[in-house]
Image (tube, rainbow, N blue to C red; front, side):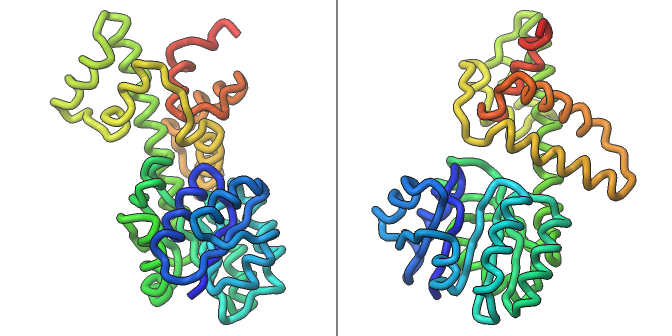
Length: 289
C-alpha cells in the first residue's frame, strides 16, 4: 500500500518522516516548500512536483495543511484523480462542517475520507507519539489505524466524519482556558514573590496540577517563546470553536475570554511565536499599546 503525504510543515514534516521510517512500501510527498520535500527525499521518500502526482501514485493520501480553505483547495484539485481505490486521510485542524462537506465530495468519487486531527506538538510528532482523534465509518477505522499508528500512540475513533475535528477543537479550547488560568495565577503569585518554579511545585501537590503547567513552567520562567505550536494556530482553533458554539446557540464565556487574549496577541504581531507566549499579554506587556 503506497502512501502519499501532502503538507510538510512543522507537524507534517515529522509525521511524514515517521511514515517513511516505519512503512514497508513507497511513500510520496509534496509541499510548496521544495526544501521540505528534499529533506524527506534524503531519508527515502519519493518527492513529487505537485499534489496531483502524489494522488496518482498513492493508495492512501494524507493531508496536513493549515486551514479550511487549504483543505478545500487540495481536495478540489485532487477530485478528478480519486476513485474507489483511494483512501483520503485529512489530519488538518479545520472547521468540522467544512470537513464534512469535503468528505461528501470525496465519497461521491468512490473514495474513502477520514478526518484525523492530532493533539500534542512538535516533540510528540518527532517521537511518533501524537494523540489522534478519528472521524470515519467504523470499518474504515480498522483499515487506517495501522497507518495512523506510525504517527501516534493514542488513537481514538470519535464517530462519523467530522467528529474527530469536533473533539480536536474541544480539546484545544480546553487547553487555551487551562493556559489562561495558569498565566493569570503565575503572574499573581509572582507579584507576591512566589517564584515560577515554586509555583509549579506547589500546584503539583493539589487539584490544580495540569499537563500544560508541568510541561511549560520552565519555558515560561526562561521566557522561551520558540515555536512548537503557534499562537496563530490556536487563534484559528478558537475561532472555529466560537463558530461551533454559535451553531448550537451555546454560550462559552471562558473560551471567549481566552480568545480575547489571543486576539490581542495577534494584534501585537506575535502570532508566529509559541502559544505559551500569551503569557506576555496576561502579564500586561501590551497594556500601554
